[in-house]
Image (cartoon, rainbow, N blue to C red; front, side, top):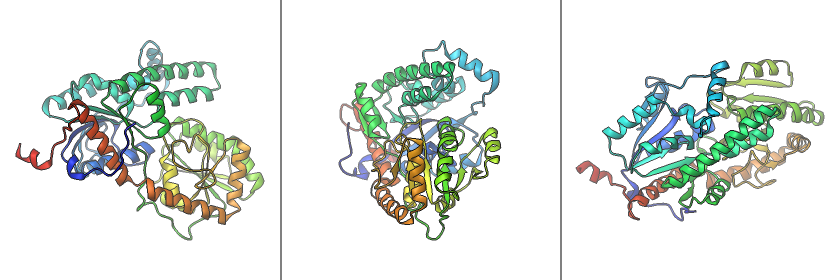
Length: 429
């Protein structure tokens, strides 16, 4: 796997014209993927011409914020929220498609028409697929160099969800989606000029598929925005922070409420759980209302006050891929964390140095209760975690690594010579 041995010379990479394809407007940064996309694209837009095509409302406040960052935003009407019989009908229809549902769902005529129009009206040096399923549009871009940004190994997520399913029909469906996604990922990544991966574990998997032109572009955190805040901590508070409209997070919360929190309360009776995250389903609101030791806050404009107040941040994920930005944000604020191995997967963290790892419910509860009772241990872990993210996970250095990957994708089609253009040369053209 190609790695960046030193910071690239900025002048060497100036002036790329990049078309980015994604599922939604990356603002507000209220989920891990949006946080990542927003922070990287707005940095790259300072030095390159970035045009983003996605679903969304072109006149929304989010669209105006994205354009104000120098990103040329083009949108198509949003995807409908499917539920009930309409969703089941689409899922049934997908049984007869060779492609996974997450690819078919996003492939609409209006998106393809907009893409064709942009390609006919503009010259692009690079097409960047900001989520692997959007590589479905690779057949539209002709001979333009392309890069796939693989936030996760998507087939791995489907496989893990199948293993956690309790109903036979769900297990069969998710296993089918995993097989379809595995075939799709292998096919498009082999065709791409370059593939960027978030974790070394994901990179190893991709290399095992025979994909060699790859680089590691990790998740990050704004280390100037997320900083430790003195005197704000509640020694009894446990925080669960996650987008509540994504199934793996709901599974993690169910695991926490059913199997872990009762054991924490046995060891630390005053412990309370606070749940922060966007779009909590109605059923969850009703459930937490019957749970006096837990509070559902829901969506917030700024997670930092809630991180500051927590004594312990918990990440009990059993399903997932890539790496967790919420862990990096908590580490940047000097917080003590208990996570499953899946939750901390892909991050350069060490158990008992930067956080505590536990997979069995009894172990997870015991580690959480121990931290609630030990401010010294919380401080030690928090200081180590903060030091790690400052040294490795700042968005500026990660944006430079993605910029280098862009250059490599262009160089593949140029026979080894980069097709990047200087800003001055472009102005004279």
